Length: 427
Image (cartoon, rainbow, N blue to C red; front, side):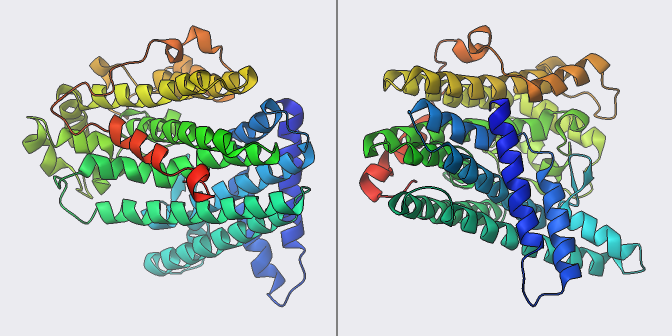
């Protein structure tokens, strides 16, 4: 996002949050201020890549509604924050990026005044659910009042509604996956369907689609962008899953043990169930008291089985395929460049934050070199040259193991089957 756009989006977010705090109503002002203050703090550390993708798409397609694009981009960031806060409730996460999450902050506050841990957690969860609801409402209201013609606003509201519905379906499916046996048939397809609905729809398809709607794009363009957004989102989630399993939490802000202790059914784990190492790995997943030594053993098994390499390859294929699709469909070069930059940054972050396979099982309590910390920080700020990174390499094999339940074909099938050209709404 250009610096003026970034500043404009931040100003709009501040305006929306300030207006929400000062809104008239019968609710006690202290409670409203507490919720909104915590919600505002939760928006502070975002990279704003979703708003950046929206404004870049609008501009690249020749859009002339710059003010409306900023308003919708700010609403999208509030939507993202609302989802993050409620996801922390669902996952029971009291910490996020090294500091208390919104539910954790409220729980910590009352526990300091003598409330039991269980009751404090219940209070924190309630605050997270309610703050998320308020964020969703404010985002919806911001779109409804954006500076665009009524027919465009109506389509944006349809997009918002469908996005929330899809994300809710994906979130519930993610929880449901944890209930069944890990080796259930179609586990890989289910894990990637969750990635599409829970992550791709709101993080990539929404900004691309909304930016295009504001630029009066036709249905063919909207369908192409939805397909590209699906590929980007699945690739992004696969990288995120790898970081949650192998990344150093002091660099990633993600717990190094959380996914293992939860036994989270990601594509990485779905692939592992088909390998010879699975009988040794299975007892280590879903253990609430899993220690660092067993975590190292689990990571070694995931590496030795080839599941890590397979997931990395699949993530890279989805991400680079998105850029290839953009070029093949003849999208404007500024938009292809914007998509290349997004892909490049995701891959570069993965390269910087994922240790080489030979050191991936190192104790997460080991020291982190200062150089690595500096590189990780730079990765989150930079706009990389896509021609200097593996994002520009030739398309890798989407199915390294031909006998495995490949995800590439199901993904393409889903993204092509449900586009605005046939449904009137995004997938």
